[in-house]
Length: 160
Length: 413
Image 1 (cartoon, rainbow over the protein chains, first blue to last red):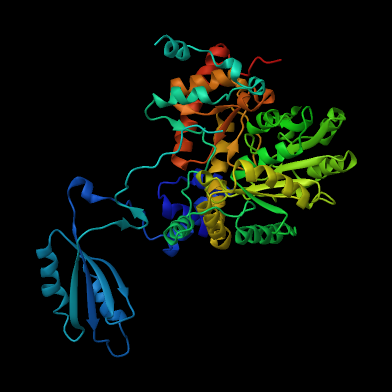
Image 2: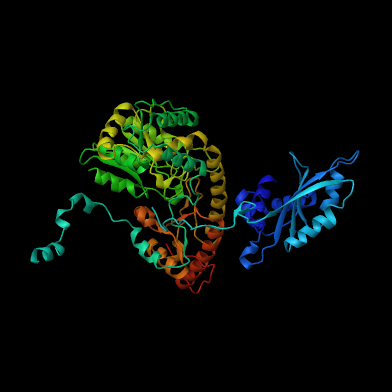
């Protein structure tokens, strides 16, 4: 399963036929493996990485450090789930260090994100102690892909 | 005024050494001009990796330059690099070469090959080699004053050179057998048993073997057999290896030769006068490659393997029958169904579909009827190129046998 998923992670559009050829297994095995992975939620979703800057439509991203008062008996999970429930929250992590949760929030503009923090995040009483919001100013790399490729260094088109 | 004019029109062909007229011009050069005027061509004609040298290796070279490593090294190469090469050969093949006197760091396998030939050949000495083979083998032999003896190899036999075909061509003038497996252009790997027969031949007739193993790390679903490992062959083998393909370091011009100390000493004698030493930054980079490059090599090999399987399948699907290449990054399909010569196929494919392949005839007479397709390029390129080649082959088959339709057989006897 691992090799099938590695191929799909890199290229969600790889066909079962291509995957079967690359790995030397049957198409039926590939399709079965994919179904299993989807059922187990090893495959969460098939998405495309878009560079919105090319359309001049850059969404605003903010990395928010959240300090949390852990709930008795449930630790951080319950508050983390509450926070993840908000659609503005793109990603969320429990982290080591000086704060507890690192969440990535997307909005149309800074105002929207600021409203989210003050209107939805901070008011989670008895849970959220404090937040520090970092607005992401420029993105260089996204999930392994460089956003701006500098001059393409080309090989000679034909060599012995 | 008159003198300057006459110099400009002077014919210099008479001052050029006669040797050069015996070396055939490259069958690849003329495609350069055709390609340069073309936009959007997909090239399957490249003989080098599409990966950039891994960053840690580039970083080591940059760092060495910053620290001031810009001077000559020992003719033999940095001792540390020779030690690392020796360790590498020991761990991969169990071969014990003395880094002090049995290893020479060369300017790529290209220079290693040139040195080996110039070291062992007296005028008129013969060197046996497979046909087709890498372009430098016959050319290098002629330039070193020797005579290439080409042994035909065939698709049915996966282009392996057979001991039975070599033996009748051995004469009193035969000095060496020159082989390069995994092979360029065919992608062939020779199984141990077949190589063993060649080793026995070399023993029986006291022949040297020059083994170009530049593609040694690029093998798929099989093991590479290092020629120096065969019984009693270590003394008689000039082993050439390098970094260009495994570590994507083609432009760095760095490789090595391993052989008995007398041969290495003799090769170094030429090397010290012609090159002095391999570039120091390339040597420093190579040390880093051997120290920490394993994971990257393995990742590249896995990636090549996936592309290899796709390329092989697509070529066979469109009617260009191809044996399974188990090494390097080339497929060598037959273009028989199109009833064209290799050159004609390559040229028309380029003009009509903007796909570059190298005519097999550029690598020898037995390459006629084949083309070399490199899979050292992205999967997307391979799929698109195969798609375009499919169209091209279908059209050629229609023209060739219009009454039989797309599934028609070729009319070869």
